[in-house]
Image (cartoon, rainbow, N blue to C red; front, side):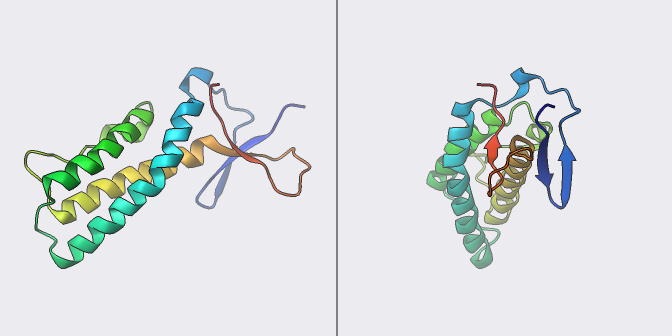
Amino acid sequence: MGKVLQYHHASHIINLSNMEIDKNDLPSKADIKEFKMLTPMVIGDLAEIRELSKKKQDEPLNNFKVKTINKKLQVIKRILENEPTSQFLELLDNESLPSNSDAVLMVSQFLKAMEQFKSKYYIVDKTSREFKKPYYWNTKD
């Protein structure tokens, strides 16, 4: 009997054992390493922008913040390029600097796409007899 693979999305458990997954569509280990490194950084950026937005929501972000945030978002966008959510992800505009509230919206969209990515590729092997269910990243390498 083959492995029973499942992933959790919100309160739903989706069985992947009967689905064909093209190995080429899976993320690489290098992508996962970058994803795991950048996730807390993007979460931190969003928290910072939210604080700015509470004080002055219509004030534009400065160029330094936009460049710093975009550097991370560019890598995330590349990692998510084959995901359906990628078409909705836009980098912050460094010429017409976005307002704090617009930046909150845009970075929030990245984080939601990142959550979907994780729920799709971070899976549990239900056949394991270990006490802790072994979650692992489903990668092409």
